[in-house]
Amino acid sequence: MSYTSFSQIRADLSSGKTSVSGLVKEYLSAIDSNRELNAFLEVYPDEAVALAAEVDLKLAAGTAGRLAGMVIGLKDNICFAGHGVGASSKILGGFNSLFSATAVERLVAEDAIIIGRLNCDEFAMGSSNENSAFGPVLNPIDTSRVPGGSSGGSAAAVAARLCHAALGSDTGGSIRQPASFTGTVGLKPTYGRISRHGLIAYGSSFDQIGPITHSVEDAALLLEIMAGPDEFDSTAIQNPPEHYSALEPTTKPVRIAYLAECLESEGLDPEIRDFCNRQIEQLRSLGHTVEPVEFKELKYLVPTYYVLTTAEASSNLSRFDGMRYGYRSAEGKGVEGTIVKSRSEGFGKEVKRRIMLGTFVLSAGYYDAYYSKGQKMRRIIKEKTAGYLSSYDFIYTPTTPGVAFPLGKKSGDPIKMYLEDIFTVQANITGMPAISLPMGTNSEGLPFGIQLMANLNEDAKLLAFSRYLTEQVK
Ligand code: GLN
Image (cartoon, rainbow, N blue to C red; front, side, top):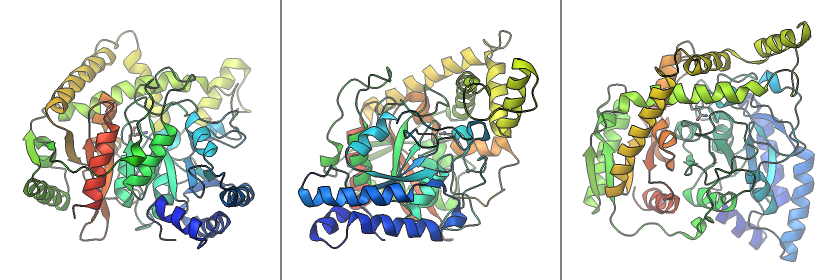
């Protein structure tokens, strides 16, 4: 199946060239023949087939929703009522969602079909999908390489066409980095644009659900449907969402800032650097203003992110105690012993590392030195970024310092792995919307993306320019 946008699917559905049942069967057989990618943790074949038949009837009767024919996979940290959810962790083994995430409810209400749940890094902590309790996901473009993380299963499934689109979550880059590694589009909306109700929390003041798709057009449509206020999430933005799906590509010249420190940074793959420099020149020749700005705080982005998110994670993950959800160790003695054993056996190494780090930075003796310093740094980064975005429309960077790396290459060195996030965490620290757009492949045929970030609540402007860049400049 080679659909790159949902509008093509809708056209084929209305001309009778395909049916939703036919599409679902094709996806199911693609899932079957790509088992080795390990993208899906669970597939819902019977349910999807039954639902497809219903949606076909609705289409024939003219009563179908806007997403009739859209087959979607969910990252395993997003709840879907009556289905297993586990954040790819042993500690949630056997747990079923009691309700659906608001985002999922809104998709299903428009007749989208959820085909299964997708592997990810445990509790969304990682940049390679190697931290899953259920084994790594392989990158469909080169199976000796990682698909990125933590939404690795989501990106791999979309890239390998095992579903049309997928939902991921992005706390520090987990939608955008895997999108960059698999040649797909990954959108992290403004913080609060999509309700977090039903998303298993990692760093609550950073987390955001978003789509991974083949086209900006589809990302805009999915955002429009999922976004909006929600009584179950007080941090959800109150204003109704804009009509992102009706946006036309930008036609006027825009002002773009690029972070000089990013493009000069040593760790940046020279091929990606050359591409960015060429693209900057091209954008200038098309009449846009593209200027370097300094961002000396670049080196503080990753430390700020890791101090603050581990603090939030240590608190969020305290609810997994072997008493209320999923896994309980049979070895523990008494309540405390059972909690200790269940947590020791149920969480993987990286999650434990972060719980300990987060507990440490919040502890009475170190709070001022780490957590409160991290908060101050967050404010400085926010103010500086907002300053640039008051005089420029977008901030342009590569999405990642390099292309997809071989499995095992960074898993032994957490610092190396954390540096994967250097360009992506700024959007989460500031809450600003950011997107990774596929820009082609390097000399080895491996994809990479560029990232655009806009000011708070400028998701529409970001999507319109993203359409321009992916559809009209090349
Ligand atoms: N790679 C980052 C981390 O390990 C980002 C994760 C995410 O966005 N969920 O925390």
